[in-house]
Image 1 (cartoon, one colour):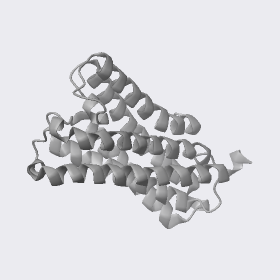
Image 2: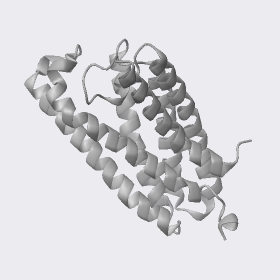
Image 3: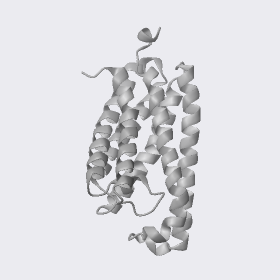
Image 4: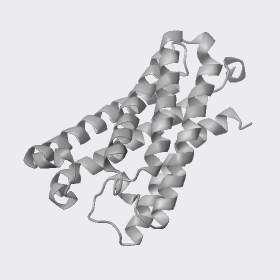
Length: 219
């Protein structure tokens, strides 16, 4: 069975590598539509799609197992009600990420957007619930989560606001059939904020590395 510290590390290293490599290949291949672009635009036919789909599908499985291990190890010395919510939100995030990995935005836009929004919203909830659960958690990890969760809310709210401004200009896009070129003036803001949101998740998951160890092993 995978060691818990390695599991926690995979939780953030794997999605970080997936985004970095798929985005890099997407740019080098010349397949990118414009710059900047959304993370999911790298889920484009070719090597970048293999990296994107394989990486996020595996990440979804890892996150579901990580949320269970966090719960199993820490449930007795944390606030149990927050820890149960952490478990449920973590499993939900992992499941949605695994589905999103196979539902690309080019051919399955409705499912992709729905699962991506779930990952964003419940990813923030997972970090917040886990943070609240650890009343006696590692102080360095808690301080990191203060930063990462704050950045996450800034990224999510800013991205959502930028997209809403574009949809206000082109309300017909609400029913689907986005014209990404027409939306690019707002994507110029939304895409970097999405990457900021992703970085906030990596930092939050990194903070779990010390929390995934039983108290007896930390002392």
